Image (cartoon, rainbow, N blue to C red; front, side):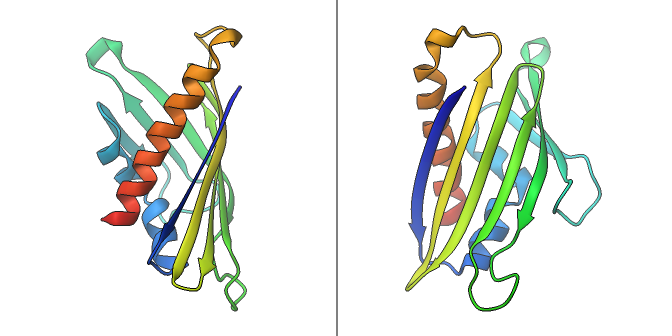
Length: 147
């Protein structure tokens, strides 16, 4: 598996950043040739399943994901950090991602870490998916926090 980690600060409350980062359909706007569909009924939370479909026509694949940890920020009052873990369960892409949103003096700090496995690539190519994941998730996080 290829590991990655990105971190960003934002002048948003942790709750606003959390809502933006966990609106799964919104991620597609930052990922080329991708649509995202939430397949479970609202509200979004523990057990939510969503599918990112990437590609064109017959050259597309589905990245199936499920929320396995859902701990929104401030859940017990008093400024607790939020944490969400998503497991990737697709045939071509597997792994997991963890989003953490913590309060800061002037906004919040977001950390997104994960491990990704592209089943079609041999183990020696792990630096490529790690670099690609950092770039892609960095783009998603930055775009969602700025909008």
